[in-house]
Amino acid sequence: MQTRDMNRDWIATARTLSQALPYMQRYAGATVVIKLGGHAMGSDEAMASFANDVVLMRQVGVNPVVVHGGGPMINDMLDRLNIQSDFVNGKRVTDTATMNVVEMVLSGVVNKRIVQAINRAGGRAVGLSGKDANLMICDQTDPALGLVGTPSQLDPKILHTLFNTAMIPVIAPLGAGLNGETFNINGDTAAGAIAGALKADRLLLLTDVSGVKNEDGEVVTEITADQIRDMTRDGTIAGGMIPKTETALDAIASGVRAVVILDGRAPNACLLELFTDHGAGSIIRPR
Image (cartoon, rainbow, N blue to C red; front, side, top):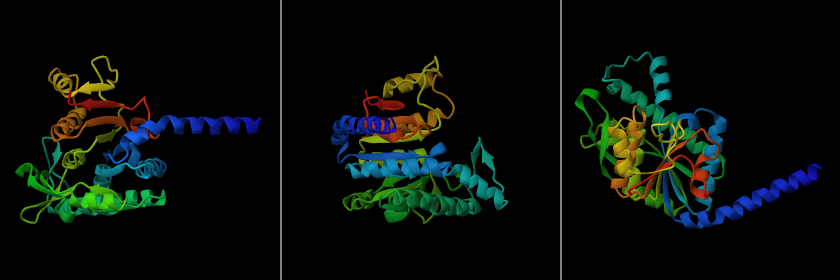
């Protein structure tokens, strides 16, 4: 009985791989930028699962780029160091002391944890920040917020170099200023800017929600840029979803073929989106 059950499992696995073949062929050579945050960073098990997915993507010819956040880890370190923060309209002011902690946590602890997980899964990951090789040059977003930046110049040559050697870039959302400053960048914003510079086939924004929802609370699986604007104007899209959909619209305007907002809590969410007919979350296209 156990042998029959095992045989059924292997047959189901083989059938799944066979069904995935057209999608693997479709994405061979494609660039996929993944914004990692939320639940997928919260546990070793979730991180290992994500790393396996990224390594499989690279193995079948996809060029994955991981851009990560780290807000909760930054908050924890600021609390441990007893560094007090000021806020303007609900946004943290990033002064020099805070920036030092942000860079330490993002480029150090968080970035290397992701790199190590991918390498442990059999990939070859390289940790970077937007400061490396002038990948992201920033303007100051708002003087009232201090060292918070908006990418204004992007040079993705280093990423193409890594693609050519089958490396997987893992990027901390930090950028350089024209006067030598270090700027903290919103993770979604950084991912969208990098995806635009690469003219990526897909930008995957992993979140802790299942996607963009309509007025009835149902996930909209396919949606256009114009529909996003309409849903934002009428209040259907609100709160924390607004920055993500704004990132999606900016990325599409920069040449990204499509953006997917999907639930990073779901096992193998990236593989479901890329390599199955079902997909995952909400895919946003130009039209």
